[in-house]
Length: 193
Image (tube, rainbow, N blue to C red):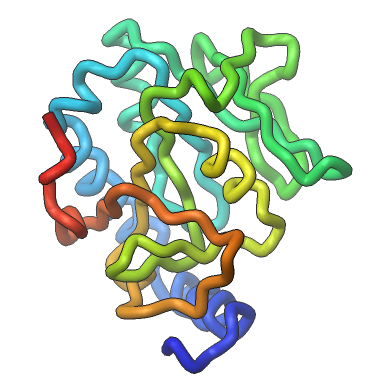
């Protein structure tokens, strides 16, 4: 697939995602969340940048729900289309969420904001990832800007069919620290303490 362009890879994955039922992807998402839960770094982190899934992305709802109960601070992205950027705001329950651009549920911008420099962990959605921890997003560069600014541990979450050996990455494409799929963790646990 490395000879294909990013747009080919995106349309290939979008077609592939349609073939899976929501029920199957919901189960895969739960398996991914269950792999994340016991990770020591995740367990001890308090300020976590999650995202709210759209269009058959990996759903982190299970983890977010548990994070509320465990007293972790849950931050979600708010999209600023004109600036092509994201800000992350705390939510205190799922009922805080409001419809935003792209049909996404987002936190209200009045809620407390956390700057990327202060995240402990950021969960990173993507269209495709590769074995070298590279990532292709949706094409707007929203997450690349945030990933460049943060020293947080970056966890890419994806279904196993979104993983490629190599992706055609460009200079501005930011990598993640590890990728977690329903089949396991890519690039091992060497970085966890």
